[in-house]
Structures are given as C-alpha cells and as structure tokens.
Length: 206
Image (tube, rainbow, N blue to C red; front, side, top):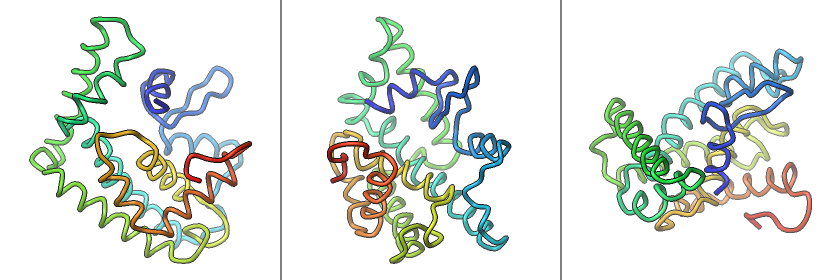
C-alpha cells in the first residue's frame, strides 16, 4: 500500500522522493545530490577508501535487492495475479488500471531480460537475495550502522529495501525470511525505525 501510494504521488513514478517547495526530487542518488547542494551530507566523515566501499555496497544493493523486489512483484505469476496488478492499478479507474498494470509488467520483464534475469527461477532470485544479505550482514557485523556510529547513504538505502521486503505483502514469506535469517540486519532495521520513524506506539517491525 505504501509503495503504491508513493508511486502514485511521485510525479515521475519513482521512489524514494522528497517534495521541497515546488520541486519533486526522485530516487536516492538525485536526493543525495540535492541535499548535498544544500550543505548536508551523511558521508562527510568518511575517507576516500570508505566512500568507495560505500558506493560498492550501494551498487550491490541496487543490483540485487532492487532487482529481486521487481522480479517478485512483476515476474512471479502468483504474486502478479493475486497482488501486484490490483495494488498497482487501484488508484486509477477502469480500464486505465489494467492498461497501466500490464504496461508496467511489460517494462519490468523487458528490463529483466536485458540484465540477464529473464530466465531466472524464483529459487535463483532468492539465492541472490540471500548472498546479498550475507554480504551486508558481514559488513555490518555488531556495529549500529555500516560505518560504525553514524548512518550514511548506504544505511538509508539498505533500510529502505530491507524494510520494504519485511513489510510488503506477497503471496508467501520466502523473501522476507531471507532477511530474517540475519539477526543483525533485522536489528538494524528496527533500530532505524525506532530512532527516526517511530513517533508514537509500536513500529511495524516491533
């Protein structure tokens, strides 16, 4: 529901986004650059080697977790039929809701084919997710954030994807279970939710 609303509200159909005055800035990279131009950066305290490492892990997340999320939502026929089409099309009237949902599915499948994911099975995608989570878990270790005590752009990116995986309804829990296998990643998500987003009551990961 949250992703559907954000996609509907965002003027160019991409998330995350921020709305500042008359400007809408979408996707993490442009948002980071926009905020940096205003004199703020989460990674100012990192050295050049750490910044390069951070960018490498961000590429891993985008290449694996983001692609896996798209695959599960648009290429897994059970999820598409039971959840994705109706959820994606619900803000729009008939027949636009069906047209836009099928258009989106075609776009995602074309992208999957272009990057070599077109013939992957669900089990192979889940294995990719597990390997990505293992790499992230090892990098995080026992630290509160990926680069010790302060969050960076990597923490924001990882939290966004893991939180989405943990809280988005699918036809089964196989994807979220991959994340839950890594207790430090789960604790990481709870920590950020409680510190930055939990204004009152219990969070969704509590």
